[in-house]
Image (cartoon, rainbow over all chains, first blue to last red; front, top):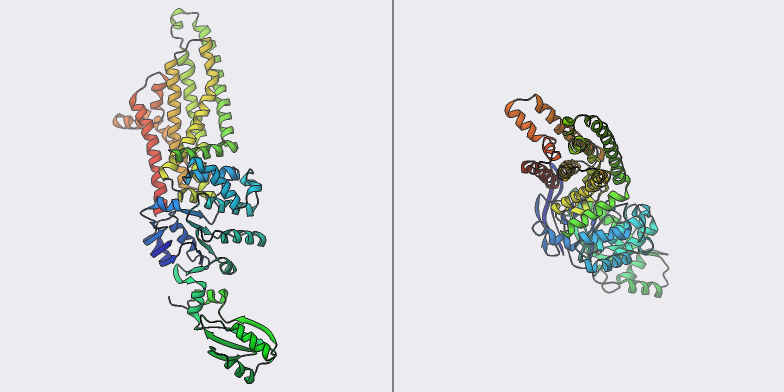
Length: 308
Length: 255
């Protein structure tokens, strides 16, 4: 649904992004991740047709971003980093205006506004001036604007920035509800957001692609085995030997006070491990996944720990 | 076309929900009312004196004595006030970040420019129409010639349209509305000064400077002469302003 090939953008001598190639499948929510000034906004601006690329190709919904700009713009809903609002308009008239410039037919305009108001939960403020509504509602209005023409692709640049925790949760739930019907790409540097909302990520740093794929794929590419860390009331060779008898287990080792159990990807021995512990009256204090969490993954990738 | 109209409507909402349009229109009406009143008063006293002498009485002409100077005064007021009307058109979008919404919509840059320009022309039209209301009384109580009167207003409109096109251009160059207004104002003053320079110039230079000056082309219309070269001048000036605006916007994005 979104595809780029060797995408490069230079501002004079400054290289904003360099040879970026990635792919987002239809109906998925994809995160565009990277430290500040990594080129996230530039990438999104190229995809939406706001900026031309210096070289390379990009396509959205099957249309070439450079050659079929109008078709691309028609199939994208875009929330830029600064929410593009006209404070002197009401929420309703603003959405009506966006519907008009997004070429929603006049007969369907009212229905489109109603639908966007409903999806974004703006019923209580629809008649109010944008100037007077809260930050959370402004952000929602921005998202409603991006959805007004029911686009196939939705691109959101830092959709939860500057909101309070309750509002962040609401916006995330809203984004999650878009899955399936829309293909969503959102940029963020909040890792918890990626974990909660996204199916996969594209990680860039200093304009270069560091990694891309689903979260599971990325985790797999970093370690050969899946597994758990187990903390029991005792940890000694005897216990290790007990676990080693489990069929399918590749490794059992002591790691400080914890026992590290590994098995190949695709299997899951957690139930067997638990059962064993219960049978042998081993008291479990803690059990956590061996797979790197998103924070570790991100730090490893951004610091250049992976060749893709 | 409907996209152009959508943009215009939005611009008009912005003009008329902020105080700018009201203040500009109100002050324009006030000043034009003042000039009109004092010109009519002066015309009255002059006409009384001239009535003593049958020869001079032939010379009494309300078009030449009231409307021609009124139109000249109004043209200068437009020069002072229209930069305020055009200053926000692109500057504000840039500052608010709404430019990104416009340029990522399936609307062409030409449609955006035309939409904004059209809205500014509506404000100009409102200024002229509302300020013309008191002058209608001269037709009720006297008999001015309608053609020079109407051509004078047409001239003011064309002049204003040229000013606004220039203002639109500067507005596309900066995100600061004040800078945009000052640059527009400065350029307009420069063109005004050209007509003074034309007095002291000789030969070809005089012709060139005269041709470039806004007010030379306006003069004929206040006398009731419609010369196509004047029309061409204003329309090409406006077209050139819009064309430059388009170039600037494209250049900034493709750079």
